[in-house]
Length: 349
Image 1 (cartoon, one colour):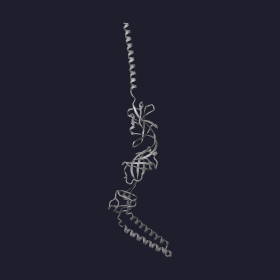
Image 2 (spheres, rainbow, N blue to C red):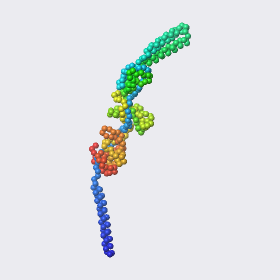
Image 3 (cartoon, rainbow, N blue to C red):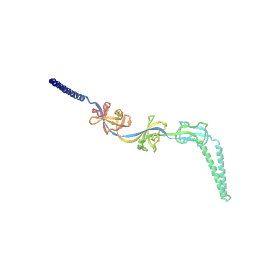
């Protein structure tokens, strides 16, 4: 019985040793297999930062350099309309004529009154010089003469106002009256706009306000695709209560054939920064949804850098967030992760 127990114990010990050796060999085999897995290969190129101007981007509308409502300065019936909507006009050009009505008769009477009072005043003044008239009488006649002249001048001015003229060079944007209409003083007749120069009125975010400067150069892109140079002429000192943005006006010269009201995007220089020029295809997202690019460091380890796009141009984008010199992964970035060791193939510059 004792002999059987000894044999069983020996067999159990041998089995334990065999199993231990088996697991050790399995672990060694797994480690050896892991060493045999080839490293991923990526293609890289060296990128050096360069000095780039960043821009404030703002949206808005294209407005006339100036616009005004031409108002009637007197009453009367519209007798002639010489300019219509869309017509170009020169400063002082006749737009409309009102009927003279009874003003011609009134002016004739006023002229006669002026002549009469002047003659009386002059005759009495001559008598005064010869000692036959009092100074008080002369003063009274002089006052009558001055009043008659004033009344005549008022009527002459009113007759001149029957001819409505353009206040400046521009275009008739809107005609508000028709032939035969009877109008009164203050009634709107035309809207005239000056489009020889235009103003891009844009809204700038409050975070960008410290970088704004008067007379800064700017570029304005119209919704039609045209790009115009301009200059910042006005920066509002007060933010809009609702949007918390600041109104900025950019003067655009020589815009005679461009209609107002078009949507625009303005680019105003902000500051100079160190930035890398890359293809937008190199942008990727990490597992947290942060935009960035992947690089390889000196130990061939993949690194992820969050970046910010500061300018987009025809062939690529400028980004900040990378060190002054970086080894960018240009091929294979989608198959490797940060912290992974890789083989490197250098792309042709």
